Every structure is written in C-alpha cells, then in structure tokens.
Length: 402
Image (cartoon, rainbow, N blue to C red; front, side, top):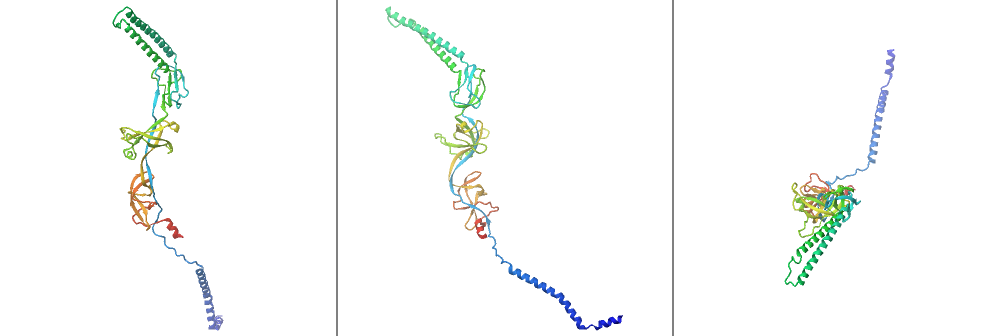
C-alpha cells in the first residue's frame, strides 16, 4: 500500500503545482483590488458632488450697542409731598338758649349737605314768645310813664310863665330828674324787648356757612342747655392740606414775595396714583415743626366734596416748582456712574463724557451741559466700559450678515 501512494505522488508534474499556486493567489488578490477600486471611485464621486466651501469672514470686532439722541426741552420741577385733607372751617353747633328740640332738618345727619342759613334745629319757642310779649308790655308801660313825666314837665314850664316868674326854672321845677328816669326805663324796656326777640330767634339754629354735617349729637325731643353740642359740621367750599417740605425742596419752588399773589399749583394723587384733585398753595407757615424741623405749606382745594374727596383722606402731592429751560432729558438707565454718559463716536468707539445735572427724578436726569443734540448716546448697559472701547450698531451687524 505505501508503495502505491508514493508512485502516484511522484507521478504529479512540477508544472501543475505552479499553476495551482498562481490560481490561489489570484483568487485572494483580485477581490482586494476590486474593493480598492470601488472605494476610490466612491471617493471621487463624493469629491465631485461636494459643494464649494463658502468663505465666511470673521465677525466684526466690538460690542453691539443701541444708541439714542437727546433734544433740549423745558421741564417744570415737581416736588413730592403728602398730607391729609382737612376742612378750612370745622365747628360744633351749640345752642345759645335752653329748651327742648321740637324739629330737625332731614339734612342734619352725618354726610348731609347744607347751605348757609338753612334751619337745622328748632327749639320749642313757646317760653320765648311769652318773654317777647312781656317785654313789649313792659316797654308800653315805660313809654306811658315817660309820656306822663313829659307832660308834667311841659305843664311846669307853662305854670312858671303864667305866674310871671322871671329867669329859667330849675330842673326840679320842670320835673327833669323824673323825666330822665322815665326815659332810661324806656330804653331798658327796649333793650329787654330786643333780647327777648333775639332769644326767640335763637330757637332756630341755622347753618353758618355752606357745608357738610360731620356728626349729629342730638335729636328731636332732647332737652338741651346753653353750650350743649348738637352736631359737628365742616365748610364745603374749601379744604386745606398741610404739606411738609424739606429745606432742600424749598429751593426748588418759586416762592412769591410778600406782596405778590400766591399761585403755586399742586396736583393731588390718591394711593393708586390717580389724580384726585388740584389746588394751590396759599401760605407758608411761620415756623418749622418742632420735632422734624421741616417746613409746612398750606394748600387749598376748592369744592373738595364735589371732587369726591373726604375729610381725613391721605393724598400724595406734586408741587409745581421752578422751570428748567433748555435742558436735555435723559433716561436714568442711560447714565453711567459718577455723572458720566457713553457716546458712540464716528470711529465706532466709546467716548465717556462727564455732564452737569440740574435735577434728577426716578426716571430722568436733566442735563445742562456736557452733551449736545448730535451725540449718539449709548443706551445699552456696558460692563467694564473704558475710553475708546470698540462698539458696533446692530445695523452694521445685519449688513455684514447679508
């Protein structure tokens, strides 16, 4: 068996072995070549179909900011204050006589509106009517006595002449002392009658001025004596508000000379900030408050109840002060620290300017010098701003992006 196998292997030719080796190598190499060719073809196709790269310029340097311009204007300074509405006149109604209340006006109640001379309360007049009649009777009696004494005096003078007596008769002869006493009695009776009539008139208690009833303290059927409080009423024509003003704010108001008319306007606001009324400052109190050392001005409001105001209502006040002429009104948000403001220059840089401020509110600063109407004020807040800092406007950025 081993001899047979050796003869078969020996019988194979060297040429056949070489052919088989080449075929095996080709089978291995050709697929690699095909794969490489396909990959190169794909790379070529991808390269040909790839769009051209767009060259993007780098963004412009500088911080993007907004700008604004300011124009000159005239501004009236507003001084803030506050106060409580008080009646210019507020009184208690009291009777000057005593008696029982027999009638009362329907308007004599808290909140009632009354006019001057309206009859508010009537006190029983019966006793006072009797007093008037007694005074009239007493006057008539004294007048009769005077007439009698006058007749006696006249008769004494005639008798002096008829008896042929010479010279001027004495006062005793003419009954002059009795005549003077009778005249004095008549005058006293007239005065008593006037007092009785006045007491009778006082049974009708009238409103001393146009006003509103604050409170009613008595009612029909009640007996009142002299000085009893019947009610309280306040003047409705004018209300007053005491406004505290600091020394610093005093300098912001044009106070008139002593001989000039007061015409300082005041706008009153409620708690919601709505306009509640308007008025005028009419006087400045002579002394400061002992505790706070502030000044007090008194403003008047005409017909406060017609404007919906109530007594003891708290109001905020804006007092019209001096007028600032030709100033620049700049929002506070534009302002940099230390009275400085940023200006956008033609070279796209920041120019930091100092300015002079005359007045400032919570919203605006009023600048007198340091800027002009042509300055482009930087409105965007800048952290770490410095002189010459590069800036750019949004419009420049938009143009570059297009």
